[in-house]
Length: 409
Image (tube, rainbow, N blue to C red):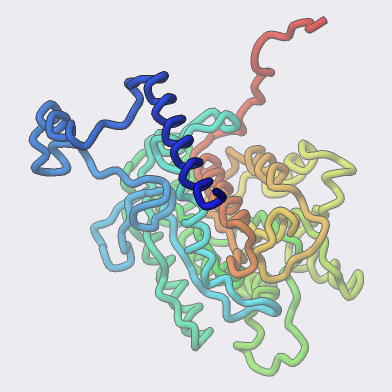
């Protein structure tokens, strides 16, 4: 008797399915039966090629070559015909870190985090614009083939690469608006492309500032970071090359006269040896905004402090992802608890639009320490903000609350 139970149960289930099928009938949203595929093909082209039947080969957010936001990609260092107004350039260097390595994979992680972004869906409510529709040509120029074996060679490679792209003719040749900034401050009186660099550890800023100095002279730096990065040297330093680290590059840049005396940190919260570190920081040319200042004074005061500090000088913005709290961006080499939120950082960046930016970077993304790609996604979104920032003449006005207010009672 019990052996018959499975057979009886299967018969009941089959009858139930048949009854449901009879009850619901055939609907338009049902899949096309295989027998009808030939009729579908006849009414939609002969299907001999993909283009005839389905049109262009459009990359999905999760498919296609890995370029930032699916931008046009070129190996610009070797393709001298490539012209652009803004280049996205990877610098996969991480052999000057003091704690956790891995930022050589940062450019990959940031590009991967940008897969859901694209030119055709680039408009944001916070910026009131789509940076890809503002008349500038933006291109992903790939990565600098940086040596992982010789830091002196790697630093030179990054400087030569950056200088090569800075010397390239711009694509739009527009002397109005934000693009006129480079012409206004350049030594040769010409427009120059601007570069958004993807690090890499923070050492990449030293060769970048060397390159910028050839075109613009000393620049002011807006530095988002948990750490000062103005220390003279680390204990055990015995050679000139060992002085070059991701915590000393600003000190070296000041020695070389690459910065003005009007630079500023934002988001500092690291441990110090004492006030001597702050005195040294001031001598390098920086003022300081701590992480706690956002609670004591608010976002608007921080924006004003930064804008007042750099004034009308040419400005370079460098953002270490560890300015964001590691609970929101864990994939970094030297995490410090108690950082700003991603939203706060994005809000401050919007408030800086209209300054005389000649370039920007985001660094220290180390995806081996990430969780569900949250750091790469945050970094990619900040790069999108950089593009709007570079191409906007003023901060966006706050929008009114959406929809009319009404009494629900």
